[in-house]
Image (tube, rainbow, N blue to C red; front, top):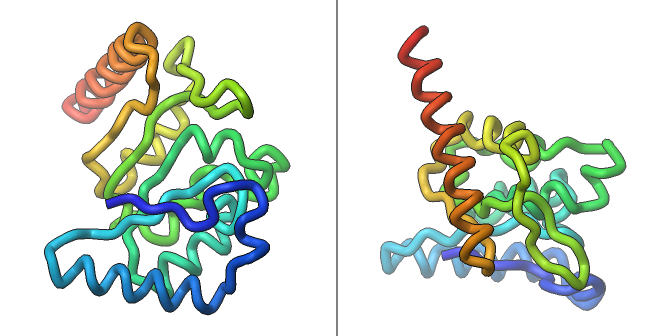
Length: 166
């Protein structure tokens, strides 16, 4: 199950960091008791848009990771080059259980599809270094979703062929 902390531009201003960690830890434990893995998703804004804070939330709560490659592309900490998209997953590659796949997110327009594999290839390469085997193409336009699926299929086939050659 994927959850968000502070969904909204200013919501983390009204949240308590310590209470958030405590509540997230309790939720992870409760999920564990019922066989449900709780994953925290990186967002475009707020605490989970900053890889250093995202890592602390994951580490201190025991949550899994949902790596949203579109959010990683759109967030300010990545665009400023202070961090890289890989910084969201490098500390805990064994906890990345889900991925949301699309090119980027634009305010007012939502999720945007990749026109070519190069738009998302580096972030897909990051996913290949994790245990993640659950990818969701997060696009509402069916035609663009199918186009993206075809790009991903070609990417995965190429990766498979390269692995077989080595």
